[in-house]
Length: 271
Length: 302
Image 1 (cartoon, rainbow over the protein chains, first blue to last red):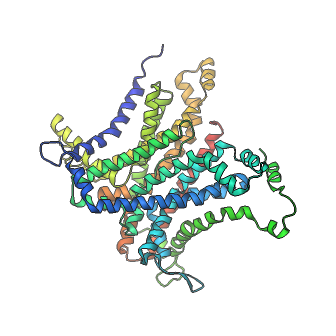
Image 2 (cartoon, chains in turn red, brown):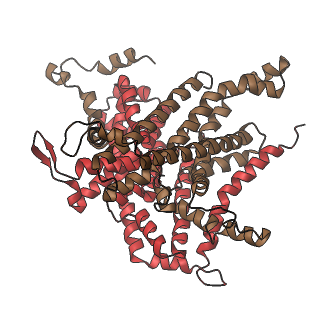
Image 3 (tube, rainbow over the protein chains, first blue to last red):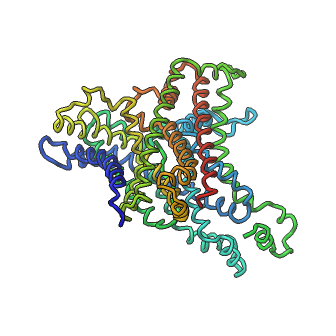
């Protein structure tokens, strides 16, 4: 008989404590806005602030646009690389790994230097300064978010394509007389749904919590709002911390449900 | 599946298509948007910083900015970033490995494993302002654990020299996303250790210690080291958590770049670009090391 794995349990308990104590601390704090009793007052205040609604809606919209752009860029590329251009694979993989090498703070630095002034080729202006208009800055923000999401999105789609035998399916569809649009829409996409959804959820979690790029592009996103709020308030930021933790948990839990048994997408973005 | 067969089959469209249409590289058009995008928003901005760090204010070539990186305050910033990244990579790496070991080989029940994996996915993505705030409510001056120490042991940890807004405090905070990442990457590697290897070494009379010393550890070592290097890079590039937790008290490289962007604290924009370039070089070396070491592991753990 195996003896009781004492050490293993010890590590597990330590890990669980490390994980739960800060959450418990925040939860406890968020409920103490009224002296002596536990109440949801901090949550009520946080939700009642129109700035919260505005910044959260903004981040939500940016997340949706980021997911759409990212999917449109990654899915055809990953599919084509699998099917027709396998020799491009090392280059595409290298490019999707680059965001790990270039931290968000450096990325936004470069984006501002490049697009914070008119873009010229041979002294002919081809693009005005993007940071002069809200629309241009939002476009730049989405571009930065798409870059941040590249490694995760590519990995999720690539895993999905690996799992479904793209070639056989494509050959079968071609031999039955399907055109390329039909193949993409009715064969590839439905089979990729899991991968696409988990990539999208991870991107959502990244964008909602992202501080660096939004902060330096001066966009009214959720994380900069939270950072600002914690300068003037104590209990409301704690409440919003719990909310954003719950959101991250929901996104990861869904990914977990979707990809049971399949190789997962790595975590670790936006620190 | 060989690529040759595949291309032949897919290209055997009717030959009536005119040669002009056939010569257009359609497959390349499918990947064009991706390459245009990465060029415009990844390569171009990086090149802009790269070029900028070799220019002076008049746009002429110079190495002064790179030499400027040896200024004491810049060296200090790099050194602090390196120390904090190394400390959290080693600490998070060891603790994460022990956790991964406990739930794969260590004999913990199945539910522990799935709970721990889900948590690791969440925690490795939980960073920035919320993470900083969670630690302030826990280990800050009025935090919950600080209060616990005071009431249970009559010990004020802040009187004993602890401070959340310090090296130790920031390291503890970073560990929250560091060790879960280690768990996520090491678990598949530990799963890849084959039962036969252990049985074979036991049959040959090896003790568990010898098995670990001569079989398991050498196989896992590249993966272990590689992942720790990845953790190093993960902490090195972190800005949001440090900014939200300490404001600007700790002079990390990322914080310094942020201050430079806000108000040219170095009084030389091009020195700022060189600062970013130095960061990218360090990140690049660590990611390359990680990729190389992971490949070494894949030979054994498939």
